[in-house]
Image 1 (cartoon, rainbow, N blue to C red):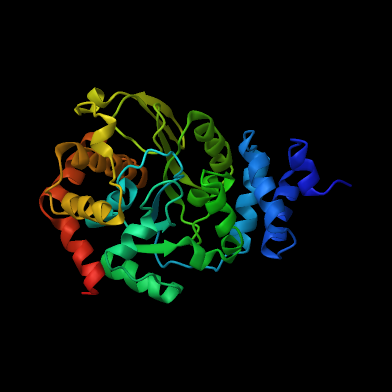
Image 2: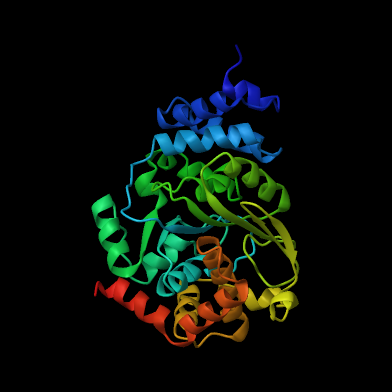
Length: 329
């Protein structure tokens, strides 16, 4: 029988069981660094299948540190790796959502292809990552939000950190982040970097007991960028939108730039929360917050969700929540 490495080297597809075992082999250190880099490279050269992604996902979840939350919550997460270097839109949206009444359990990690992933910006701004269900529930009950830093809950990932850095581009691990929230939340708002991945997620999520919305901007952003057309794939629908359909002006790519340093990213982050950001920066957080809000509250109209998200920023509710979170109030 061919080994998994041999199968991947010939561009053969893995069965769901083989994909599951591949992650287990990584955890058990049965693959050396060169084999890991080679396997990730093989999987970059072709689309990952539904069976493979399902196997990878199930293995990572089974091997994760278990988290049990006391109430239902929503995860707001993007695949990353779109190489657009935007500011931290999904993390800001998570805070806006929590301040708007949506319980949020956000899963995140260091940036894959930008200076500031969700974990990077939170650490930079003084947030202390939690490690246990008790700590996470305390935070969720007090602030309506909790953050899970992926490496603390997925010990398998520590075995591929250096290899992912060496490659410096997105790999199949980017696809897994939004699917392996250790709390196994049933509400998911996910951004993906192309339509093919959007369809892949749709097939995988249809087999779960999940309420989800997968979004993608057609010009390559793994979120609603307002730079052009974007697609929304929900649990029971698929729609194409233009920014103008929802009352927004189209944005230019440079208006979403996240900065060259973590310090610049931090300033943009705080400016959005303090309602001191540019109109473009605020609008892109508003629209993503609104679509995520409707994912959790499907009976609310998108117009109502937009209005609520905007008011949460402009009233400084989101800013106050973040201050309380950081200062442990």
